[in-house]
Length: 137
Image (cartoon, rainbow, N blue to C red; front, side, top):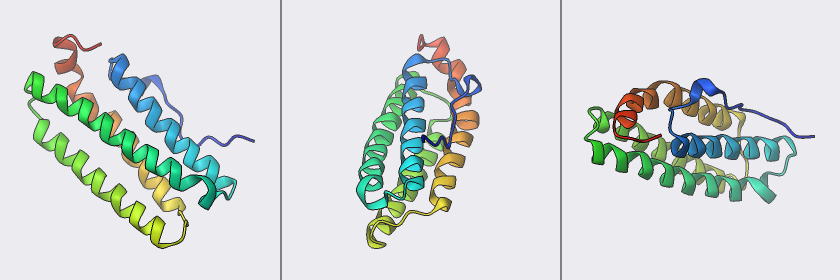
């Protein structure tokens, strides 16, 4: 039985197919982690999924940050700082996960879900007009 933890909604769209698809992939990774958590497949699956999600998150942030530079996005410093804080938190989670012999808490999944939701629905929405003006669709 598949378990869904986080559903993508059109309200989350930043009106860029490229960025929306990346966000959807991050949501999918979080759902995969949750599925493995519910199946109690911590050691077998979660570490691999977290590593993939971490690498993909870096790729996604690099995509957004590249556009921030190209378009001289007015809020790029604060936005990049949020990205950096998230990267640091995820790195901490990975270290704790590895140190705990593969235990993942619901708290970590809630943090990821809440951060993604608020970041996409608030922080990322701030660049929509800038990206749209510059032809990113």
